[in-house]
Image (cartoon, rainbow over all chains, first blue to last red):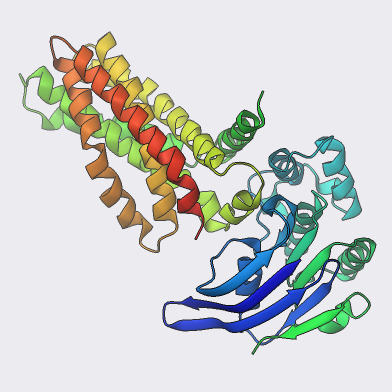
Length: 192
Length: 213
């Protein structure tokens, strides 16, 4: 699903990723670990096509519409409601019966009561739940998740684990706490 | 409705809805253009030519457009939202079309106040002037939206946007003033139409390369 050979990324003089080889098979669930600045987020952005490698080869076996990308930022408009945000993405991802799908995602992540609340009024944890709704909305085949548990309370964490367990999508997950994914992970890549 | 058109409608609707709620851009544009025309009214000596007065209107329109363009990608820039839009399977040029529609709409609304104010302070507005302003709006929004996206990715975006936009907007002023005061404005209106077509096609075709690394 993801194959990288001799992959490098440099920002100016700073080398963030150096000669990385990576092979994530279809259905694999690989954890990315490493200290701050080790290139976890950069690798996820490269895999999402949001950044271009400086050197090397990176092959992704799915189109960008089949990628679910969870970033540090929730990627939702603060002045739209939770439902309006999901509806916008549902339209852009051409999801059939989008209103029902958006409603189902909001219910699944415990946000139904906040569906008409503007994103700017949501707490950090609620925003993360909304970001998860956006990420999973189109049933992606490839998940690229950057610290998915960040900001979530115990209930939110349980909901996310449940969601990840129920899915067979290939995943590359940047985390500082690999124990959280112990039951699901099939591999681990430690970046230095 | 084709999927492309549906994407454009969804993106433009989102921008208009956000503006309706936040009122961040349009009131500032209206206030600016009225203030500028008021200043010009008192700054211009009495008995000035229609050409000079019309020239000031075009300066006011251009800078009002610049004000709107500076805010065009504010939400996307501040919240990193362009990543979310770029990842969607829709054609990335739809983002440009949606933004261009939004910028044009704000510009037209500001001009609905500016043109009567111009008529009040200076001289009556002609149909030729209205046609020229309508054509200029398309050009300003088309090239301006592309440049606003380029500037949004830069740290010195407040400096970069005017530096990129104003030189490319010179033909708008030439065509606009010409169409407003010439005895035969047809060729100037045609020039503005050609400017719109060339820069709209260039911006539409190149937007994808601007929003991806």
